[in-house]
Image 1 (tube, rainbow, N blue to C red):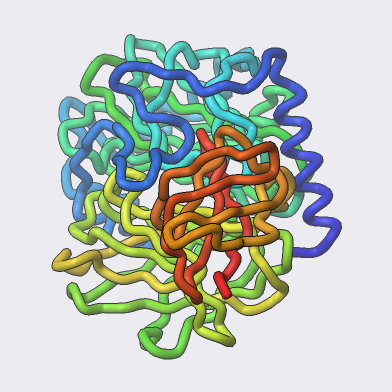
Image 2: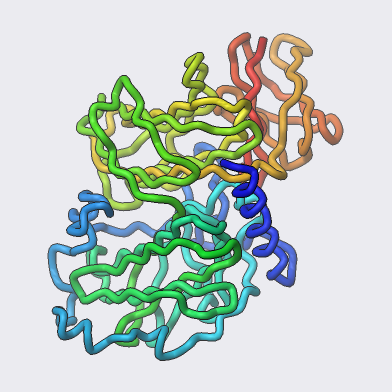
Length: 429
C-alpha cells in the first residue's frame, strides 16, 4: 500500500472516531455477538441462518444473487420492482446520525467480522469496520437499520444483502449507501427472488453509511437479513492453486473459492509492507457452506508460519497480523479436521498498523516462563505461542511474562483485548 493510501486510511479512521461524541467501548448484550472477534477457541453468538444453495456460486456469478424460490407472500418480476422505484431511501431521505457506540477503536485493524445488529439503529447508525457480516431483522414495519464504517478514497465498497436467499425470511431487501453527510449515493432493491447488491468506488476518504429496510415497508420477526459490508475488488479462485499460490491484487480483495473435499488446499500470495496490518477473513459456515476451514499466513520465501487459526468468528476463521517485513506472504485455506469441502469467500485487506502492539524481544526466564518486551503491551494483552493463547502476567507496562515452553522456532505474538488487534510475529531463537 502506498504512503498516500496509508495516510488516507488513517484520516478516514480518525474522522470516523472524531464524529462519535463519546468514547468507544464494547457493548455487552445478552444473546448479541461481540463486535470484536471472540477470544480464540470461543465462538461468537451470531444468530444461525439457513442460506439458499445459490450462494455457493459466488458473487462474481450473477445467478448467486437469485434465490431458488420466491420470498413467501410476495409477488416478483420486473413490473413489481419498477413499482418500488426509486426506493424507500430515496423517498424518505433518512436523517442518519453517528452516535451509537458498539465497536472499539481497535476494530479498525481487525474488522468487525460476524456480528448481530444492535438496536436502536434506525436513525442512530451502528458503527462497524470492514469486513463485516451483520445478522439482523427489519422489525417492526417501516424499520430501517443503518451501519457506519470508514473507507478510503478509491476503495471499492461492497454492500450485499442476503434476504430472499435466507430460508424462511419474509424480507424483500432495499439497501442504500450514503456519504458522511447522509446524502444517498446509490440504492438497490430486491424483487422477491433476487437480492440487491451495491458496488461503489469511494470518491473520497471518510465515513459512509449502509442502510437496509423492506422494499414495501413491512417488518416483523421473520424479516431476517444478513448484510455484508466489505472493501476491495472481487476475484475468482483460479485452479490449480494447491501448490503454486494464486497472486492477489492489493490492497483489498474478496476471493470466491471452493475446496473440493476435506483434503483440498488453496494457496494465495500477496505483497505486504512492513508495518501494515493484514486482515484475513474467511466466510463459509456463516453463508451456509459445509466447509469448516483453517487459515494460515506464512513467509513466502522461508515458509515460516506466522499465524494459524481455525474458528474464532462463528465457525469461520479470521485474524489480523502486523507484517514484520516488506515481502511476499502466502495464505493457506484448508478444511479443518474431517470437515467436507465447500465454497468460501475470503476477504484480504491491508490497513495501517498504527496502534498495534509490537514485540521487540523474547527471553527465556526458566523452562516454562518467557519474558516479552515491546510497545503497547498492557493489562489487556494476551501472549500467543504459535497462535495459541497462554497465561499472561503483566510485569510492567511494555513487559509481559507468559507461561509457555516456547522452543526455538516458535512464533510469539501479542493480541490486545477486546478486539485482539495483533502484533508482529517474533520467532524464538
